[in-house]
Length: 97
View 1: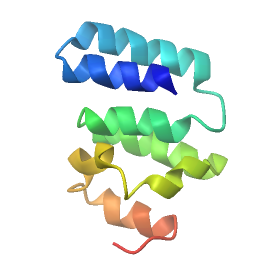
View 2 (view 1 turned 90 degrees about the horizontal axis):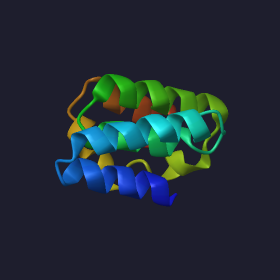
View 3 (view 1 turned 30 degrees about the vertical axis):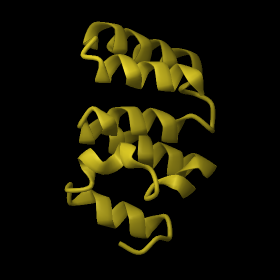
View 4 (view 1 turned 90 degrees about the vertical axis):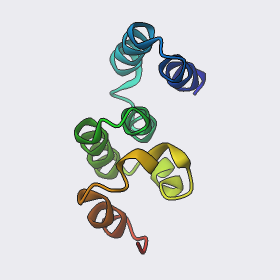
């Protein structure tokens, strides 16, 4: 989803207000789709917002979001891998930590 990449790029470029607005729009327009929860969670994770990242990860799990299969392979989740919820969630979806 290109909107997710653009949102992440804005955040990395320290254009927080644009990134926040784009993330809000992404959630409003696509947040109810079954295939978007993992992408939204990775945006929160890349910002270091663990609470929202895990909220969307749990939502993705409940929706059976296929993109969770890439969870441990992509670096977007690195900022939240220190969180004590990480190994529990990773095991929950069937991966070893």
